[in-house]
Structure formats: C-alpha cells, structure tokens
Length: 333
Length: 273
Image 1 (tube, chains in turn blue, cyan):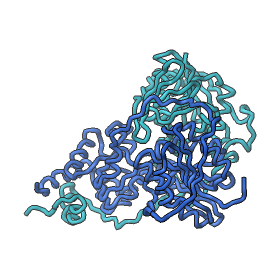
Image 2 (cartoon, chains in turn purple, cyan):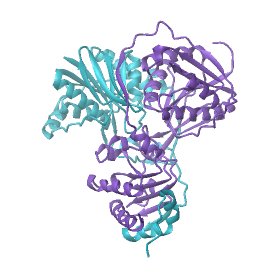
Image 3 (tube, chains in turn red, yellow):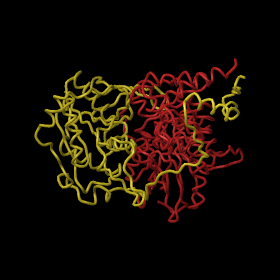
Image 4 (spheres, chains in turn blue, brown):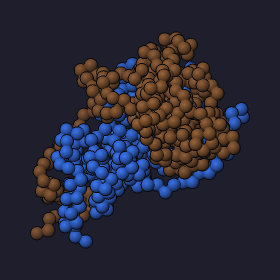
C-alpha cells in the first residue's frame, strides 16, 4: 500500500431515491469527520451508466470517486459487489467505510466486513471521532432503551452502517470538483452463485409513511387488533398515515410495512400521535426527527412519554376514540 | 432429502433489561429467555421445506447453558437433531467471531448440509450480521430477509422485498438464507411434544476446545469491536402532562394546542361554540 492521505469512504448506494439520500447524508457526515483526522472523503460508484451519481457525490462532498462502470454491474449483486469492493479496499486502504443501512447495505456490508476481517457496527445513530482518532459508533443495544458506543481499536477499516435520516445532507455544490478513479471490472470475479430471475419496483408504502407530515403510531398498549383499527380512522381524519411498533407487527395488528424504527424505517412527521407505545430504542430512534409529539400511555414513566411534548396519562384506546369524536366535531368541511 | 441447519439464538423475554447505571453492566442472566422471534420463522421455513420435500433439520445455537431450552423447543416443533455451542470463553463475542465460531462447529459436526436458515435479525442486538457473515465464513452464497423459498431443481427459488424491489432469485446450494418475519406463521409446540423434548437425553454440547480453537480465537478476545459504554438516551422536551377522563383530556389538548396541531394538519380546530 503506497503512502498517502487517509481516507473515509462512503459506499454509493443509489438504486432508489431514498437509498441515494442516505449516501448523500453519509457524505455530509464523512466531510465533518474527515476534518478531524485530516482525511479525504471518497465515494464508490458501481453500476452501468452511472455518471449522474458520480457528479452528484462530488457535488455533495466527495473529493475522489472510485467508479466501476460496466454493463455487468447493471443490477445490484451482493456477490459481485462484495468481491469488487474487497479488491479496491485492499488496494487503497481506507481508514473508515460508511454504508447506508438499506436492505442492500445490511446484506452487503456484513459480508464485506467479514472478508476484510474487521469490525462492523450496525444501524448507527451517531458517529464521532474521539481523542485517539478512532471512530466512535453509537448504536442501539439490547432491544430496550439503551444506546451503546462501539469502537474498532485495531482492525482496519472501521466500518459502520447508518440509518437513513440520521444525518443531514449538505446542499448540492455545482462548483465542487473531484478526482475520478476508474476501476476496471476484474475478469476473474467468481461466477454469480445467486441469479436474479426478476425484479419489480414495488409501490412504496414505506416512502409514504416516511414522508407523511402526520403520523399516528400505535403500540401494544392499544390492547387489541380491533382497537388498533381505530388508529386508521384517526389517521384518516387527520390526513395522516399509520405507523406501528415491532410487537404490534409481530402480533399482526398491522402490516410489516407500517413498522417504524430500527432496521426498517425512520419517519419525520411534523406531528406524531403515539398511542400505547412504551418507547423501546428501536422505535424512538426511528422517530428522532418527529416535530410535535403527543404520546398517550397509562404508564407515565414510559420512555415514549418522557420524550413527548404532550404526555397524556390515560388508556390509549379510549383517548383514540375520544379524539376521533372531538376532531370530527371540530373540523368543519 | 434436504439437509438443513437452523441457527437460532435465545434472547431475553423482557424488553427492559435490569441495568445498573453505576457500573453500566447488564444483568442478562436474571431475565427469562425465549427463542428469538425471527429464528422461529426460520425454523418454520425449514419445517415447511421438510414437509414438502423430505429432509433433516439440525437446530443449533451458541450461548450459555440455559439456551439449551430453545433447542428442546425446536425438537418439539420438529427438528431432528441439536447442536449446542457453549463455552464461557465465548462470552462477549461480536458478530465477526460469532460467525467464525458457528462456522467451525458446522464444519466439524454437520459439514454435509444443503441449506442453512437463520432468523433475519435478533430482537436483542438486531445487527442482522451473523447470517451473512456465516455464509462468508463458509464460502457459500446467501440471501438476506427472504419471504418465501422453495426447492427448484438443485437450487433454491427465493422471493423477497429488498429496498422496495420485489425480487425473485435463484441461489445455488449449499447456501444460506435469513428469513424475514412477514411471511411464515410459526407453529406452536404441543404440550406433549415439549414434555417429550425436555425428557430427551442430553444435547450434544461442544466448547472451544472441541472446535480446535484457542482462547484468543473466541469471545471478546477474538472480537474486532469493543463496547466503550452503554447509556440511556436522555429526553429533552417541555413535556406537558395531561391526566383525567379521555373526553376532557382531548378537549384540553385541542384547546391548548389548536394552533400548533391545527396548523400542522392544516385544519381549523377552534372549538365550535
């Protein structure tokens, strides 16, 4: 490995709009972190006809982009991408690699970390550089209400996946320039052991929930599936969407695509109504960007109640029904 | 006949673990354990494949001795054989070393497999990393968060949703899948089945030495990551508390915050006089 500047890499995940936004958010954070360890910010872009993304990542903070543009990379393939990334990481030796915690990122990054025999922290909600120049990764722990700070003291690169919405992207800078390093697709990559038979873009329910200005979220405290259904009526009256906690999804009171938090989705409504939600960290990390929060729970000490603007100590289901009635009375059409 | 391994983990049943804010340590051992929910879905997927094509299922776990319970539960549900990887030296393992340890156990005690099934993530640490890393360690292909799978010739035909793409994939065997929680409905073990399973003779338990591993290879010592600290995130807001009868509370809420909430949902919420 030749002597040169340290670098922080961001994996260019661009397959859909939201994946691309995470990439931009990570470039922004990488730019801040890079100042502390005097590193350069690099992005990688694998795919076919990807100039658009290369330009966009430079405009968002990358000073160098490693590009592998090849028709063979037209579809995301974990096997190929891991093999390709492993090669260029070994060649250029980045200090840190950041990847969005998208479905792809969560499948690709663990395998890459394993190949490189280094540590990986999943679903980070915070990244800092400490006094020793180590990447301090904050991640949820133990399914309850805790966060843990994790470092990779010796192995390199230090690797983290980061949830969408944790960091803010920096504005597009049209004047920015960057170096483009073209990487050839090695001819000797292993054959694909996984073959894509078909791929269709889904109508995106999660995107609707993620973007909704009003969200009504329900937890186990709603009591039953029947009572939980009232939240859909409340959401209709408020012109919002319904979100759910993981226990509720497990109990099949709500579909999995309504899940809010952890690996899955972050929401950033202007107003969040939270009914019968205890506030496990997986969930609360997903609503970090919510504006005004109204929480209803019988237990005044629930974590969710502590982080609310208005905490209503009462039965969640009864308040839901009362709120539907009162809103219908007040909203004049 | 499809030879399958289902990797499972025992997780605490409670979501709030006893935690000592002074020492920052968790007293995991006092919490009651259960089979990680996603692992139940993985086992169910294996049981469905076995019913359809014939097969043999090995349930395996790595954990403290009490984790044996979930292997017995797996037997009651229809697993044919169990493998318990347990050693005090393995405590504090991160995903890198966990997948390494599991791979060594599989290579020695059940090398002749077609398919490994894992849950898509655990409910305690939720990294979703061990499955994919295990496949790397064994140099086999893997697909994460699958919703449906079936045998198709000599390969697995798999359906899943990944980043809003509905994908159909074919994977060569031997291979590994992690199973999502949305598709399979885990069956319940009968009381009689559980009773029998817990009366079965001892479960094959192996430690670091049986796997030919040194102390440096396993547990915290073999891990690349280090936990600096664990803390409880602090809340920030003004936190106005309302109590009383639901109807009264709702009126008070909409009276006090009619402008705030009304402007956010773009509705006039002033009470009708």
